[in-house]
Length: 122
View 1 (cartoon, rainbow, N blue to C red):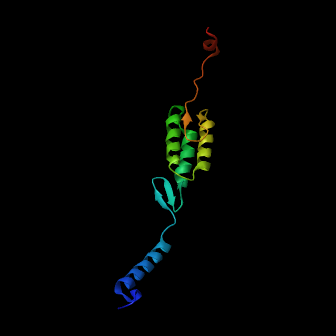
View 2: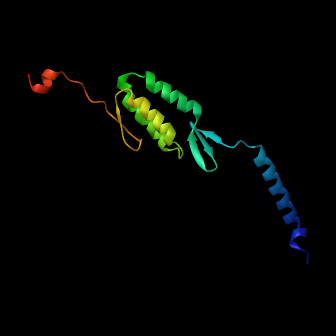
View 3: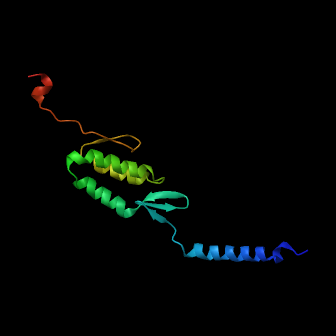
């Protein structure tokens, strides 16, 4: 009876494994998928998507800021390593007058401004 290392199936398996290792070296480290880069142990937002988000939040009309801000927070919630990005986007939204949830996952509506005469009932 032959040793298992001498069997044809074992030789083919070793050859396939060595091809897989060679192919792995040539592969990129992260896979770009729907605005995110998926790496072996983490997911991050693609830099271009992040830069577009910040510039859009700074220039969008006040009416669309609430929905757009919550949409970007939803996208960032899917990325496991996004706290720094969420903080920057949260600050961009806060500078426009909206409130942000403490865990950087939600935008609150901007309080409506009203005249002093309405406040005192005149």
